[in-house]
Length: 392
Image 1 (cartoon, rainbow, N blue to C red):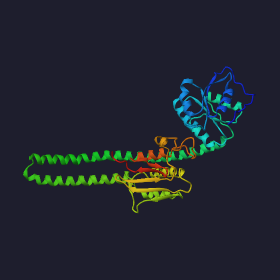
Image 2: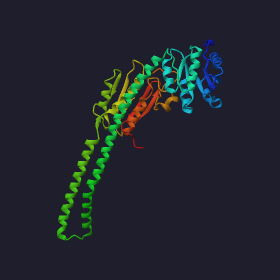
Image 3: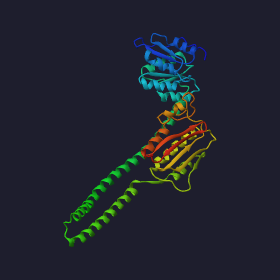
Image 4: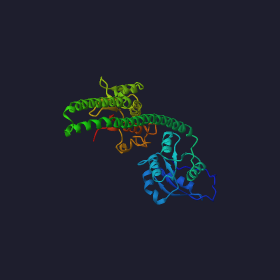
């Protein structure tokens, strides 16, 4: 980008306000120098310049800026990742994104990362100065050229996440209810078993001591057998109650086929017979849907996603296999973190604020299972949902 000429009729700010310390981060030297001249006023001072996010992070503590004017697209570390790290370390730091009008998706990602506002690189000087001052005072400025589209995308994304969160809440409420009922039944079981066990133990001790008269021993033995049979029937009744009241037996294959029916490019590879497991059906649907949505988003438009169901040593295993380009090794440690995606942040092309894998793992953990990345490579990735967590 060539050097930018800003208009001379810049709005002046009240001299009583403290001077704003600004760090400029942009990979274009000429544009950075133009910004430095613009911001060299009685109200503002440029305390540092950096060509990328990595250098900005390295120098931030030594210069203590109030506001960072941050380019979005830069080599080594882009503005999205740099903003995320800066806001994690310095939550009160103001960040204003600099972007082109075509970078609507990048603007959305910058706002999610923590930027308080953004301005276009071809904005006039007054707008840039105003954005810096607003960031310093805790406000924000959104350029009108791209605001409607970005707001629509954020509104749609937040709506999807609210629906997903509500579905997760419903599943968790069901699990909590099952746990409460389990606790109640266990308490009742202990109370009801204590009396017959005590009676049986007393009879057995009497026989062992040999203190009972000979003519009464047969009756005691008969009573002991009756009590033992009654105890066995009681245990059986409680087992049936626990299974009927708390365990929702479901066919994982059937759940997978129900989910796949809502997509044109999803194929289920499963055994002919059922794969039964004790789980919450709402949560199970949500787990497979989240993993399928993730697989479709990162696969070519004409590629098929496979949902494979097998019987593992500890229960059913569900694998969602995509045909994407694989996950960057540097992103592996954060793919299950909220507000993350596995794409390189300076080349992200897929929408979504990155909660799908997090919700899938949370739901699986709530049912004593787990979701992990089993494999990834240039031919695609495989995510594995173990319906029952293996014993370690």
